[in-house]
Length: 585
Image (tube, rainbow, N blue to C red; front, side, top):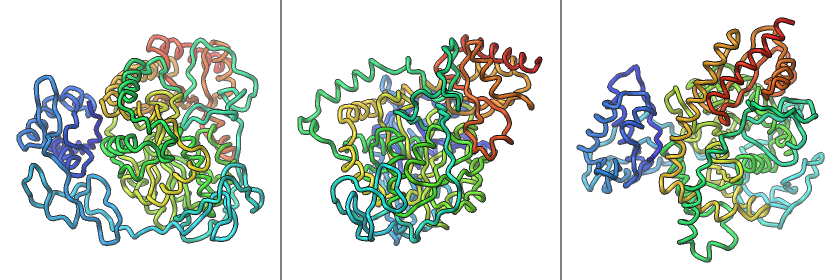
């Protein structure tokens, strides 16, 4: 079964008509291709939180129009003759976002029949000027711009070291002006929190999950630390089947050194998936396969540093695990506050940065979803300063009580790089992720991989390709959404009973909760008492910039993916006792 991005305006009514219109737009834009199997009416109704009759009505209408076909035993699929519009690009050559009918095409095609102009989905697209990202740079040698570029170690006062061969290429990440240091001090911390994007390796060794204490955490019977999926749920048999199917037909030539951008068939499958589920503007040429989001981010920071950027804006609070890696790239970090609507774009504009890392779908750790107004303001900021948005699509797969939110990259694909992985949806051990980027950035990412690690493992890429193609990935995500929702419900209800003075945030999506403790609570003492009771939890203070941490409400970040409902309830009871003991002196 296929997962879908179908936003609904519930206040407008006529939900069946809205669902049908969403499917039509997806077919016309190419996000849903002929033969794609759709969810059952029952599953889609559950996902959209509507009655099954609403979905049945929409499916029947689309079947009558010829967009869908339904066969007993084979479910409902996009009709074989359904195909996208013939899209004409705007005069400046900038691509239209997916789902937006071309302003220059007078017809859309279906089954060989021409129809009148389609209804505009989401208004008239803005005409974007062609963004110039610079001219030429050189990996490891002397740039034609003058001066060497560097990837890896922290630059030394304008004298970066050289790595790799003298490979020249064009389209550097230059945005029309030289970045000026904002004067923002660099803020680092040894605290390792398991949320946001996970960054393993040496930086995570020997550090307690709660923050600055370097002593190992005591053994815990109940582990509520965030950042890990249910690893016991990894679909071993289906993955083995996908790997066997891929190996059975894999040409011998594919066992050589891979395309540094990733095997073409996986890039094609991911482009289709991300366009369909995340409303991304993704074609295979914009996709680069990375070894997880961590490598994608590390590579992008190296490219930014090489092209003159000196400051990177990041959310505050944010995952502490990624801070040392970002600082090692030689960029100053400007911490930008997050409130109930997401990142504060006005504060971002004052930071002096022209690149920002955000988690708009489910901010880590607060769980806030970037509001529509802030999304528009963030895109406007990027255009105004000739900047770049790095979008970590954290926790986007797991939503429970809200309509799907499309990615920022689909709004302005020339200003946003979308980063994602299967670390939360499948397992971090696979080390498979992706970056969807503007063409000039894609070229540099491919070349960066070619001179640093020669590309990602091939067999795992082909196995993921088959897993996506067969529908196994969609089925696994549906299973995990149901499982995680039940666990979230159990933990949230138990926290309400045993921590009545706490405020639970971020419940609508993801695999963690942000729990603001009662006023006056001693966060560190609660973490310690919980550990003595056998419950491992993470305090939120290490996630804030030190200048704001003192004023931030005491809070815990609780992961719930790895335990069943009964154990989660017991863990909440013990945690409540730890807080009560502290309140009682």
